[in-house]
Image (cartoon, rainbow, N blue to C red; front, side, top):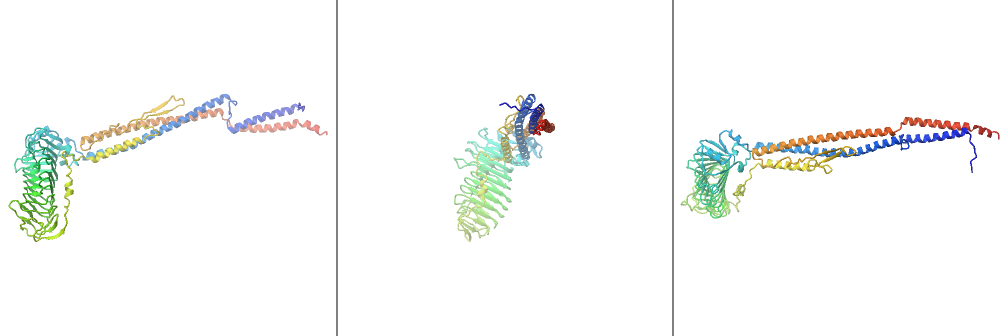
Length: 620
C-alpha cells in the first residue's frame, strides 16, 4: 500500500538535513572514541596503509630490541666472568711473587755473596773449581752427577743454597752431588777426599758403590783433617761393597744431619754410617745404617740429639761422652752397644731399643751424674764380658729404667757390676711394669721410611699448590660465565640482528680464556727460573684478559648504540603512523558541538515548517 502522505518541500529538506547531521555526528563520535581520524581504509586508504606499514616496521624493530637486549646480557655475563677471573689471576700473581721471595735465586746471585769462590752447576765446573787454587765456598747449584772422585784442598768448602738463608731449598734438585761408581767407572775407594779444614753445608749427597769395591763417601787423608758438617742429607748404597759415610778425621755436626745407608740383602757386613772418626755433635744427628757407627770417638754437647738406627750394632767399638742435656737414642736389631765405653753426664738422657734381651760386651759404662736417666726396652741391662770386664760406674741417684723393673741405683760411683743388673745390689725398686721409651719412636720415625732413591720432597709445594688451585677455580669460573647457552669465554659466538630485514647482523666473536689457552702452566716453585716463567705467563694472561675486556666493551657499546637507535627509530615510525591516522581531538570536539547545535536548529526548523499544517488543525 502506497504511502499517500505528502510532505511539503520545507519539511522534506529539514528531514534530509537532520539525517546528514546524524551521520556526521556518528562519524565524529567514532573519532572521539578512537582518537583516530582514519580507522579503516574507507576513511582514507592512502593514510591507512601508510600508517599500517610504519606501525608494522615499528613492531618488527621492537621485537629485535629483545634479542639485542639479550645480547647485551650475554656480553655482561662474559664481562663479569673476566672481571672476577682477573681477580683470580691477580691473586695467582701475588702467590707467584710470594714464592719468589723464598725460592732459590738464579746462579749469578750467589757469585756476589761473601766467601763464595765459585758457583758450579755441572761436573766440568765442579772439577775446575776443586782443582784450582780457590779457597772458600764452592756453591753447588743443581744436581751434579760426579764423573770422578775428587779431593778438596785445605780451605775449600762444598755448600748448598741453604747456607745463604734460602728458605726451603730443594736439595734434590739444587744442591746435590751424586756418585755412581759403576756407571761412571770410578775405581777409587773414595768419593770425596778431605785435606785439612773443609766444610760440607746444606747438601744432599748420594753415593752408590759398585759390587767389587768398598766406598768411603768422605775420606780424610789423616786424623788431622777437620770436617764441619751442617745440614747434610746423605744416602749410601753399597750394592755388595762396603760403604762408609765418613772415614777418619774429626767431624763437627751442627744443624740437622741425616745419614742413610742401605743394608745388603745378602751380607750383614753392611754400611757403616761413620767409621774411625772423631765425632762432635752440636745439633741433631740421625744415622740410619747397617752397622751404625764404628771405631769412633763421640762427643755430644749441650742439647745435642744423636739418633742411631742400625740393623746390627748401634755403636761398635766407640768411646762416647754425652754432656749437658744431650740425648742418645739407639735402636738396633742386635745389640745397641758393643765393645766400647760410654759415659753420661749432666742431665743427659739415653734410650736403647732392641728385640734382643741383652746389652752385652760394654767395656765400660759410666754414669757420672745423679740426674742421668737411662731407658731400656730390654730385660737385661749390661754384662761386662768384653775388655776384661772393665768397671761399670754408676753415680748414686741415677735412674735406670728396664723392661722388667725400674730401679733407683744407690751404689757408689766405683761399684763394679759384673753381672746383669736385673737384680742389682743395694737398689730400691721404685716402679714395676714394662717401660716404654719416651720419644724414641717419634724421633726415629721421621726418617724410618726413607728409600734408596731418597725422594724426600723438599720442594716448596705450598705456593705451587696454591697457584694450581687458583687456576682450577679460575677455569671453573669461566665455565659458569655463560648466558642462554652462549659462553663468549669458551669460544662461543653471539649473533645480533639490527634490522627487520635481517640484512644487518652483528657477530661478537668469543675467545678461549681458560688457563691452558692463556698459556698458564703449573710447575714447582722451588727455583727462580721456574717462578719467573710462571710470572711471565701470568703477566701475559692478565694482559690478554684486559684485552678481552676492551673487546667486549667495544661490542657492548656498538650493540647499546644500536639499541638506542632502534628505540628512537621505533618512536619515529610510530609518530609518523599517528600523524597519518590520529585526529585532532579539539577539532573533533568542536565539530561534534557544532553538529549538536545544527541538529537542534534543524529540529526547530522542522517544527516551523510544520506550523501551516498545525494551523489547519485549529479550524476544527
